[in-house]
Image (cartoon, rainbow, N blue to C red; front, top):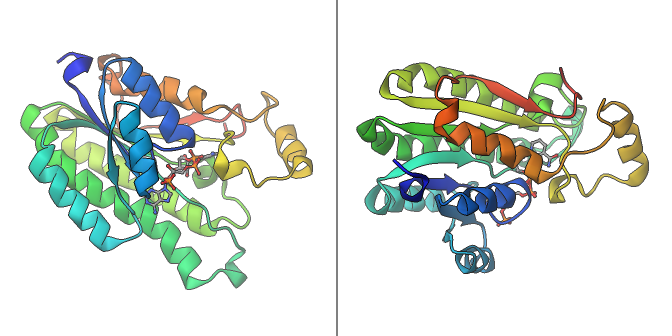
Length: 240
Ligand code: NAP
C-alpha cells in the first residue's frame, strides 16, 4: 500500500506535537484525519487539507459518537496516533478528584476506546500501526505529576499487552516518550525553572515538535516492521 492510500488518525492535531506530526505525514502523502476540541480547530485542520473532526476525549458522549462515526465512515484507518494530552499538576495531598480523573480519562480511557474502534479494520487488512505518545514522566516520575505519570505508564503497559494480542495480525503497537518539548504544554515553565531543567538534559535544551515527528515518520513506515511493544525515548538524554 502506498502512503497515498494510508489513512492516519491523529488525536490533538491542532497544536504542538500533533500538529507537527500531521504536517509531516501529510507532506509524505498520508491521508490525515485530525481531531480538535473546538469548531475553530476543526476548520483550521480542514483548511490544511486534513479531515478535521471534533472530539473531546474527556466526554464519553463525544467519544462514543466519534467512535461510531469512524466505524461507519473510516473502516480503513491503518495508522492510529494517540497524541492528545493534558496536564493538571498538583501534589497528591492537594490533587482533586477531577484533576486525577480528567488526566486518567483523557490519556487512558480515550486511547483504549480509539484503539478498539480502529483495530477491526487493521486486522482485516492485516497491517496496522498504533503509536501512543507517552512521556519521560512515566519512567522518571515527577513531583506534582502523579496523575500524568500514572496515566502515561498505564498507556505503556497497555501498549505492550496490545502488541502481544495483535502482533500475529501484522499490527505493531509502540509508544514514543518525549522529554521536554517546546509546545503550549511546557510554555507555563518560567525561565528560571527552565534553566534548572536544562541542566538535567545532556543535550542542553528542550526538544522541538519536529524531533518527535521524525521518529513518528519512521514508526508508521514499513521500515519499522520488526519493532513492537517498545517505548522509544526522545528526550535529549534526560532519561536513559
Ligand atoms: P499541546 O501543545 O498542549 O497540545 C495538546 C493537544 O491535545 C491539542 O491538540 C489539544 O486540542 C488536544 N487536547 C487537549 N485536551 C483534549 C481533549 N479533552 N480531547 C481531545 N483532545 C484534547 O501538547 P503537546 O505538548 O503537543 O503534547 C502532545 C502529547 O505529547 C501529549 O500526549 C503530551 O502528554 C505528550 N508529551 C508532551 C511533552 C512536552 O514537553 N510538550 C512531553 C512529554 C509528553 P485543542 O487544540 O483542540 O485544545
